[in-house]
Length: 86
Image (cartoon, rainbow, N blue to C red):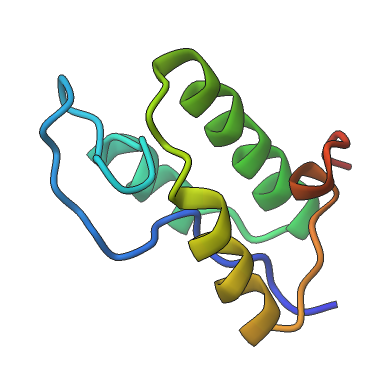
């Protein structure tokens, strides 16, 4: 399996109390994700982002954009199918 891509969908506008309007991550979270090397850690981080988006609301556009990124990288994530990460 390919490396799990970043949850970032290249919007990068931090207008929701320091959270990106595209992916819900903060700048610190984006930096932290870049340091993760194991796919199980990267997938668990994506699960955290999905949970964060559910609490914050208004991120319905993110999942289709992120799934498209995953398809390009030939990566399937359990969390995008309603499951839990590794």
